[in-house]
Image (cartoon, rainbow, N blue to C red; front, side, top):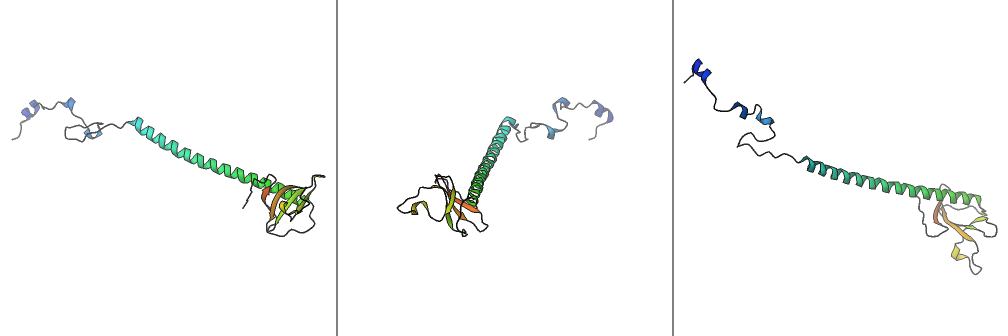
Length: 161
């Protein structure tokens, strides 16, 4: 049954126009009883979780970089010590030509502070004993550089690859 023109004009919609949404899909809450419940996200909680994750990741990366820096600093110190000992060896008294991959001992004579390279280890001097101060235990490498195996304090082991 069709409404006449007059009836259409006189028709009053029982739904209050102020109580309905123009775009119900854009509302931050459910617009009808049958719609799924929409709970607002606690942005403080989201941000806290994100910040915690970010802090853990950056701290882990920072610690990794710190270890790398410490390793590089240690390698630089070892290389510096290797260069110092190599200079000492090439300035010292040598009465023979060193052989590659052989171990030698750099000593200092206490009476005149002169240095010499020896094949004799500190514990191999015999009855007369060693009155010289051991500076370093070294090994000649193939490129005629020296690998420092021990230094004068005998506790610092150095291995440079």
